[in-house]
Every structure is written in C-alpha cells, then in structure tokens.
Image 1 (cartoon, rainbow, N blue to C red):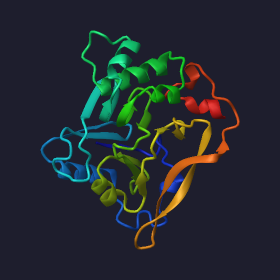
Image 2 (image 1 turned 45 degrees about the horizontal axis):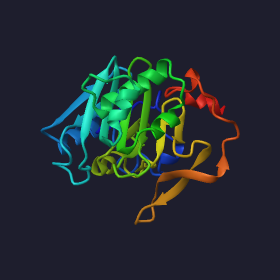
Image 3 (image 1 turned 60 degrees about the horizontal axis):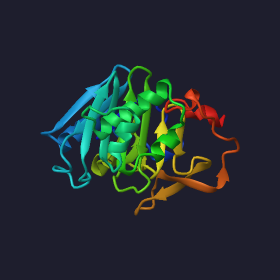
Length: 259
C-alpha cells in the first residue's frame, strides 16, 4: 500500500527530513506513484483527491516485490472514509459485536472505518484506548475525505512492516514497500514506529504508552550519511496532563488532551 498526503494537511515530523533532502534522489509524489505502479504492474489501483492526497493499493502479498510483506491486504471505503489495511485482527469477531456490525460481511478494513467514524462523531473513548483493543499484527492508513484528516497506525509487534518519509515537495509518504520508499524519499524516510499512531492533527503518539512523549533517534546509513530519524517512546519523559475522555478526544482531535 502507498499513501501520499500534501504537507498542507499532513505534517511529517521535521526529524524525518535528511540533511540531504531533495539533493539525494528524492522524488515528487507523481514519480513515487509511478514507481509503485511499476513495482506492482498487474494488481494496483490508485485514487487521487483534489486535496492533494493519493492512495494506491495492491491486492497481492508481495508477488512482485520481495520488500512487501506476505500479509492479507485489504481496501475499503464508506461515506468518503478510505482505509488500506495490511495484516489481520485476532479478535475481529468480538470487535464486530462490540461495534454492532453483526449480520454484515465485515473485514478488518471495514471494522477500522466503522470504529473511526463512531469515535469521530460520538465516541467516548480516546484513540489510544481503541487501538489497544485491536489484537493482532497490522498496519493501516485512513484518509477521511470529508474532513481532510489522516490517521495511520502499526501494531506494537511490528510484524507488518511499514515505512514513512518525505517526498521532494514535503508531502508525507506512508508505504509498506521498502524499495519504493528508498527510491522515492532518498534518505528522508524511516520505519514507522511500532505501537504508534499518526494523525494530521495530532502528529505522532504511542498508543501503547500514551502518557510518554516520543523522541527522535538520529539514523546513519552504512556510508555515514544522516538519514531520517527513528522514533521511539521516551521512557523518562511523560506528558504532564491526564488525557481527556470525550468526543473531543477522538481519532481526529486527540491532541487537544495534551495542550
């Protein structure tokens, strides 16, 4: 899967930028999309939005690229909310009952959309609590075309690889194909941190340890060149205020609880 979001509404952390950004073969969003299509020529489709977002999904599990994980790959959309999901949930059946989706044919991607919409509109729980309820190995990206919101997450076990970086124009790029990330973002990319979530409004946060701040760890390649930083939980630094629980602490605005 590949998701590209204009820097105007999805702000990648500054630490993802390599000092050599745009001088070391980073590409435009259009070029990165073409690379993804070339890597998966027979099973890829792409959706572009006037907001500057683009989603590309491939149905096969690594048939054309050894750098793509052999996990279930799903794409779903509902009411202008789009989800690309890789992996699986061990407790999908219980979550279907929890969200009142019994009697429907509900995949992991559709379940994540329903959870997102419930919390966006009226849910009483913050996003980190909801993500803790997802048992399994997964990575997903949500794009809400109504609100222009982005939400991405990866399970704490890290079994489904996911990477994020910066295109030449500053757009945020999220992809599970390492080759596409290397060729598209140059040195300005890094593995997406395990057990973490990223939103266009709130930035990066750990849902495993939501009260701890995140810190960037400089990354140097085999040639000694500075690359985009790794991110990890800072075990010594905690957020000073307790998170708020309510509709204003949902998947699209949980950052309000830390201001």
